[in-house]
Length: 100
Image (cartoon, rainbow, N blue to C red; front, side, top):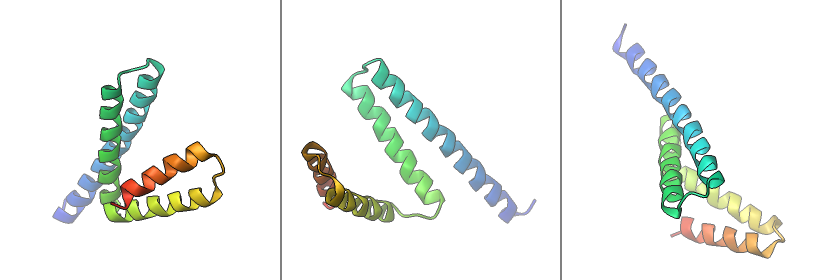
């Protein structure tokens, strides 16, 4: 097996591992919500989900900045379409965080 083949196999394995981690983290989050877990525990799970998201993006050749730009664009679109004021406020807060 050549070094190139080993690198490709390693990359595929890492991507598969990240997929499993992301699914597990999502399941953990729903479980935490269901059992009314502490804010600290939910924060930990969400932070792990964010790390996995950015790692997966990197493995796919997508920069963290590109993810943030696309998320901001999606939020702007949501602001144009959303009529519910509490949702608009939440979207606006998210946009401000992304644009810092």
